[in-house]
Image (cartoon, rainbow, N blue to C red):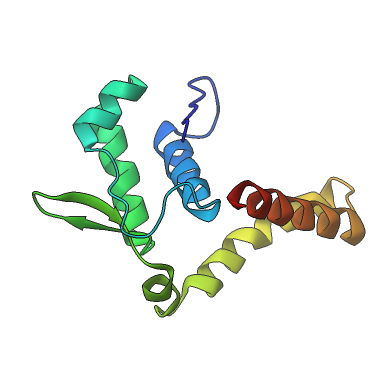
Length: 129
């Protein structure tokens, strides 16, 4: 998996990293049980501060996507474990709501939004296979 960070983006680096790791898991590039690189190693590879990677890993842990095991590192959790935890759907839909509201405000209609969502899901599943 190639992680590409955009330092000039308005999106914080740790958020970009978090999102790309989530996408790597969604596409199947990162499998359950897969160990993520150490904070130090990933920071060095990406040319970012260790605290940035650490913050990203803790965001992923907070979302229940990875487990951080002291002295062993970060590991992708099995989907069955993740899906059994309450609140994931509600949190995700709450995060989608302002994005969809913005899409409506800028003039996109329901069909355009649905088409784009379907396209994104298709792209993520296609990468996986």
